[in-house]
Each structure stands twice: as C-alpha cells, then as structure tokens.
Image (cartoon, rainbow, N blue to C red):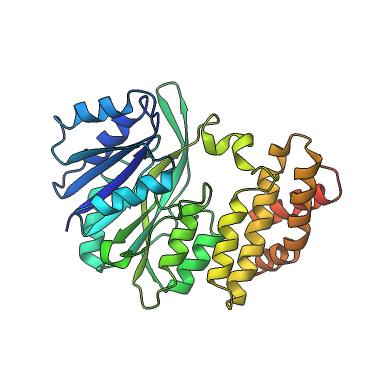
Length: 317
C-alpha cells in the first residue's frame, strides 16, 4: 500500500526542509509527500522545489488560496496513495514512524489508525518532548468509542496529524474552508458518523506537535472573531448539528466548550465582553464537565473544575 502525506505550508522556510526529511527518513519506498504552498510570501516554495531533486516522491503545489483547510483539500485531490496522513509544516513525524503505520495497516486492514503524539518545544537545537502512548497495547474501537476519544481524551484530540486513514474511508469528505479552528475535529467527526468502521487505537507515538508561542493559532488576536466569540465554537456548533440526536455527544461537546473557555480565558487580556461570553459558556457547560469528570475520574478534570470555578467566582480575572 502507498501512503500519501499531505503538508500545507505557509511561510515555513525555517521548518519545511526538516519536516519533509522526517517523511522520507523511513525505509519504505511506498510513501509520497505532497506539499501545498499556500499564500506564502517567503521562500517556502523555492526550498520545496529544490528538494524535489533529492526526493523523487515529493510533489510541490502552489496556490494563492489562503487557509489550511483549502490546502488540505487540494492535497486530497492530488494524493495517489491508498492511505492518507497529514502533517503541519512546523511539526515533525517521529523517525521511522511511517514505516510502523504501513505495517499496522497491513496487519489490521484498518479504516483509521489513531496514534499518540508528543507536545514538543524547541530549545536551541534540542526538542523537548512531553507525552506518552495512548494505550499499552493496540485496541480496536467502534465509531462511537472513537468519537468519545476525540472529544474527551487529551492524548487523542481532534487533530488529523496523529491519525491515518484508508483513502476510500474518507472519500467525499473534505475540510470545511469556512473554519479556522477545530476544522480537523469536524473532519474526523464527519468520518466517524459512518458505522462499521475498523479503527485502531495504537500504542505508537508518531508525531511531534511543536508548540510555537508566535504561531497564528496561539496568538490571542486570532482566537476570537469580530464579535469577540471564540472561533473554536463555530466548529463545535457544526458537530452538534451533525450529532443532533446523540445526547452523549452533546454532553461531551458541552464539556469541551467549558474546557476551551477555561483554556482561553487568559487570552481575553481584560476584555470584559470576551470574558463575559466565556463565563457564560463555562457556567452553562459546568454541569456537563462535572458529569464527565465524575465518570472518568481524571485528575485533569478536577484541575479544570477548580480553574472554572475560580473564573466564575471572579477570582481569576
């Protein structure tokens, strides 16, 4: 089987070469890499074009259309592999990880494989990693179980970058170009509406999500729309509409909104309108967060409940 890795790249001249190297440092020759350089103003495209002489299975496309979702959709159109994976241009696969994924697909004949990832930060030439495998041994999940993992398990999350897909499983499903945040969670939840999928929760760690305090998704001004609404909630509203009759998913979504409200409260920087909106979200979702915390009995949920209570009481401003 052939694996296509899709990489959207915008102004990534500092990181794109190493990102591509991590795709091709695997032993398998059944891996292609498609880089979609979108709306870039630096030398990302020139660097990628030079690397095509080194890597025969590297293809570089250029588009003026802005947005990671649009770039990923273009990549899906041009992918040749029976399997598909994604990587962000400022992140890195673990060395040899893609060999392992190809092996797992041949063993399990899965529709989707979910892997662990590291949260990493660059310190000079070093990469400081934090994280652990999702599970000790691989497990087969139902679509419902995978939905709940994506919404509630912080070792899984909604990202597409620690997940790999059989191409025919995602045929006809694309990324919502109207969204700038949580668009990948919506993509995954649309896939998992299909019943009867074979999903593997893997014991592998394949990905390094590299935290950059200056990236667009981490800048406070990019997190809120013109009305001061947190942009994450737009995708969650679409997921809720998709699962309108599923009370369990609605409960989890309310808990996710509470968590996101708590996580992003500090980005309000004293803006009373934004703070009031997030306090309202936290207050409405607090019973759901208590319910999910009680069910899972996770210490991290207790931490969120304490922080949320502090925000609601006005202790955390």
